Amino acid sequence: MAKIEIKSDKKEKVIELKNVSKYYDDKPAVDNASFSINKGEFVTFLGPSGCGKTTTLRMIAGFEKPTSGKIFMDGKDITDMPPHLRKVNTVFQRYALFPHLNVFNNVAFGLKLKKIPSGQYIVDKNGTKYEKLRKYTKDEIKEKVSKALKMVDFEDYEHRDVNSLSGGQQQRVAIARALVNDPEVLLLDEPLGALDLKMRKDMQIELMEMHKKLGITFVYVTHDQEEALTMSDTIIVMRHGLIQQIASPKVIYDEPANVFVADFIGESNIFSGIMHEDFKVEFLDHVFECVDKGFKKNELIDVVVRPEDIYIIPADNAAAMKHGAVNTCVFKGDHYQITVQVDEFEVVIHETNGVEEGAEIGIFIKPFDIHIMPKARIVNEIETEMIDEQTVNICDGSFECMPTELEAGTPVTVKIPFDKVVVHDDEEDGVIGAEVINSIYKGSYYQCFIRADNYYMFFVDTQDDWLKGDRVGLSVKPEDIQIEARQIEESEDR
Image (cartoon, rainbow, N blue to C red; front, side, top):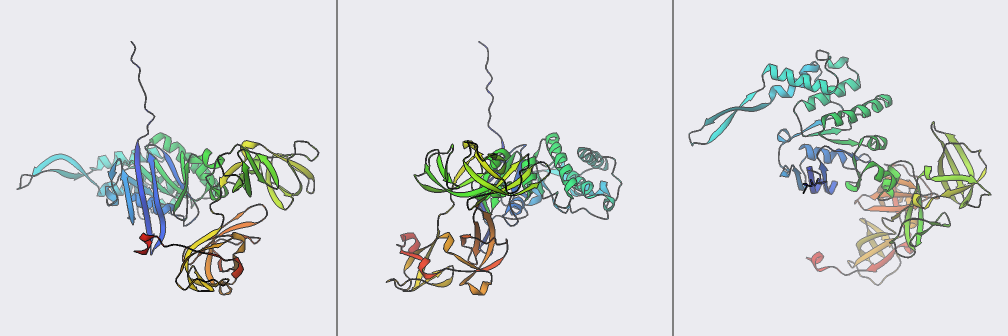
């Protein structure tokens, strides 16, 4: 009987984070992150500035210590291990090369300081046996530097002054300096950020080829969506310190986990909709067939349709699901970007052929190109307490409400619909101050994420497109504040 060899598909974890958080002055930079990175993977942390991606990388490197949680490498707890003892090396955005040293000496710098086992042992007076350490010899350093420079196709530049190199060439030196110590994991913190567009494109390809050739694990940080989609095996999307989705580039693009991921990764049409029943969704004032199921009957949801997945057909074609008028048609190099007014909604379509502005057209969407996702929230809900019978504390501000019979200090739940939050351009005009974090266009209105100064995140539906970072004031009319008394849990009362 022939022996059957069974191959295991189980991947070997090289890095694992378990419930890792990092706080600065009570503000979370990374909030309860848990994930693993497999040996040989190219993993990218992707997200906007301030989302926690670089902080996460620095905790893996050992430059930052988690406030809570554990970090493991090859199954060993390295949470408290100093950076120089970890089997990782980091390439920074600014490369951090020594300007007074040539290429060879920049790459060799760490080797000259490093001590390695000598193979000789000594016994102390207590009888304990120790292995002696030694430094690399000049020949060993030369061999390792030459090998590292060859890995990055830079072997003929050993004696060049680093100040005479281009940005892409300096990056190769920085990578060679990281590789010369034989790291198990290479950490890259936005290493292409200082390069021009053409150089970025070229270096993306070179980094991918380098990853394949070396076979070691790459952990990469970027805010560039195209860069992440092009280079990665796995993408970890982050926002406000929280992991939003972990998946392959194809899944991230085709099946975003939520509206933020859909909006951040490529262009999207995002609409509010209603899931009437399995495989039936309403948006754009039309009921479409889709492939999603498992939602509650008439549940409010968000709908994502990529611009390239909407087809323009003649207005008199019986297959037209909706009709609209072309507002604009702009050539983008490899496609036309067409905006179509469909009733009160604006729809963005990518087509290979242009359409005349003002033309009446029909649109067609295939069921499997309609992506349904639960709404993150359907109302702003805040647990707080009454200040008096007609005033409630909302995010450390005193908001007037409709008269109640609730005494001061009564625990309550406040509910405020998204479209009832009033945003003031002048912060002083609001009851509380806040900062605009993000804005997503939903076809006929903008949904803004606005963080109050006590860190509560308001969802606000508005006709105005506020800019990220804008300081604003928030207020709510008394009749738009819904108040419900709540019971304090026993653990909360302690």
